Length: 377
Image (cartoon, rainbow, N blue to C red; front, side, top):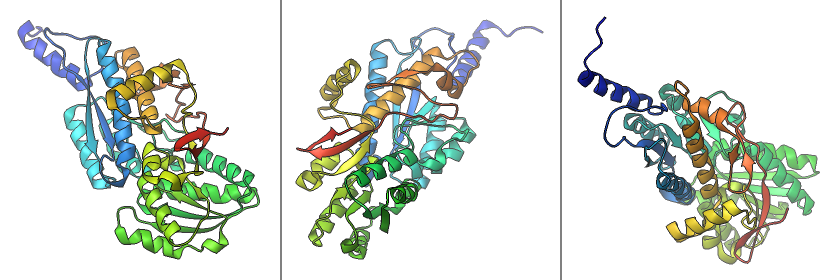
């Protein structure tokens, strides 16, 4: 059988390389095409603080990689898309990523959106590296989702233990139905965990994020006299909005947060009202490791603001992807490369994925003091 002539072979090989995107050998002359990485996050509405922080962390990692020469001479390109916390928009974004030929996707940033796009990621064989998703029912599954946070189960149990240690026994909660994959999961675990410490969840009131009437309706349902504290299972913007409504209603109960809301926007919007609020976090802003300090300087210079937990986690997972792509062998999928390229050097600790793409990482209990998140453990 005769081989095709060279001038016919090269375009064919280039199309093949663009389709697989990640083989460690390249052919042809001229500049190599970029390696495209998708970013799927809520970049609008009340969840935008989380999404924008995740985008910034990923963008910094990509820019630093490109400054070092990229991956085997190919530059990286980050393609952000807004899911607007809407399943249909998230699925449309996945279809666009597939058309764009991305090699992997950073995101989504909420558990509800992860559940919405998992079928599409499986069909397209596209890895999702989420910096902030942690729903328990997404754990231990052989799918395309990799998660950088410890599970909701772990976080809720740790929160219950800490609340009980402060003498809080009767708890009320306000939770967001739009991200029920996370909020209801968190409350289910918390209800059982606080019970083991002699406490109980006396009331859990749902609200729907971005529906104006829903906030006041939820607060009116609160039975504040029955509770020692109120847990806000919501994003930062909604947590502050609900907290202010609770204060206006005359309730001065301690306010307790969750990882989801522990962003710098909580501090900016909440001011004095969030002083004393506790939450479980991925990182300690006072832990001065050399890698973290270098990241902090670069992040401040690039974005003129402080990084939050989503920025840290997004930077870490993007760096993990970069390491995996650099080590990827011919014929090896991105998923296989990620599972085998670790452990990964994070900004504050070394970490790795297990066989299912899940992690166990150190968490910190933080309290807002003087407008800052201060670790207490």
